[in-house]
Amino acid sequence: MSVVPLPEAGWSPDEDELHLRLLIDGDIDLEQASSRSRLTPVPLSDVTMRSIEWLEKPLWQRSAFQLLAGVKGSGKGTYVASLAARITHTGASVLFVASEDSTEIDLKPRLVAAGTVIERCTTIKEHLRLPDDVPHLEALARGLGGLGLLVLDPVANHIGDRNSNSDAEVRHAIAPLNGLADRLGCLVIGVRHPGKDRSRGALASILGSTAWVDTPRAVVMIAVDNEDPLVRHIQVLAGNRSLNGNAQAFRIEAVPVEGLTEPITLAVELGTSAKDVETLLGTQPAETKTDRARELILDILETEGDQESDTLDARVAHETGLAAKTVRNARSRLSQDGLVKPVPDKDEFGEIVRWLVVRTGAPR
Image (cartoon, rainbow, N blue to C red; front, side):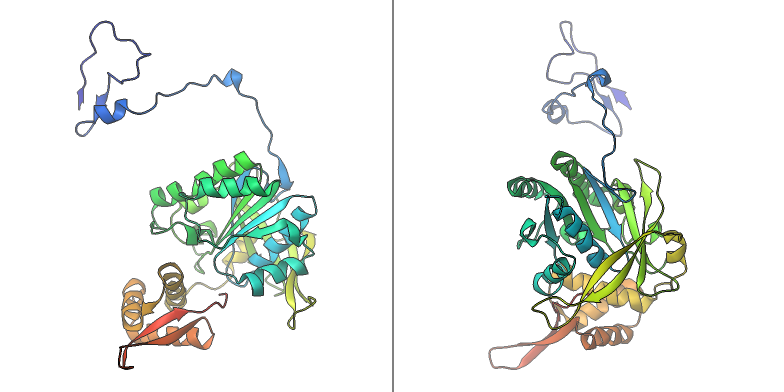
């Protein structure tokens, strides 16, 4: 470790260039350092304190980015639709960034079933990339006016090629959502899937880096009731602004929607729950390697596009420790469930040269 010599006489701390630097583990690029903006001190006596402003206590805050996590089939999309409906009835608008659910089959029908003021709801067609598109997202939100809720479902689909297991890369991608929520004065919800292995606790089961849990203002999780399969419990399991409140309960019901032939799910509020989401999640079965293989196949197809079948099987087998044959069986079941489909890739003579695996539009 060495120290840069003190500057010559006449130097003033008000000058732009930094003349005194501590060198640790090698040289520091002083030219690059001096080009940075100076640090701006803000006396705390000039700061006006603000209280937490609740959107719906004890779950949702205004001016906050929060994570909503729940296993597939737990009713996340149905619950968010009911929340959006309540927000639109206050006169606020809602913006959805939904990259998995179909807008026509899933998103709008759920909103209509919940009684949403649909004219106050908007979605975007383009694929959003975090954090690059945050300024564009903010401009769009301000153009809508009076935004009360922004939903990114699932948020992990929008971090581009960043490693979802890297704390630094995940934090870099999603931390700007905190500032965005604060500037817009709205609630930003990022939806995330946990794994089925909750042996180390519910929060630890959220897939990927711990930054998924540490960066948002709060983490809210949904659990299926252990007695009634139609009842769900939702609770703040981590927050850095307030104590975690009691769980709230809601029931999943199927209701008719005019113009549709199939009923649509609706979340009906039941009030405060006496059950604990952490406990409920801990009683649910652990994720098997085959379960992980199924999820990984879908993740790869959704984030990277169509894949050559043998290459995909080999990759998933390597990452899960399963035999390639077991992975092929898991992929076949996904095909039977309508989630993926094989598509032949033919040459100019019509001969099949390989088979591609393609993700269908069916929700998980």
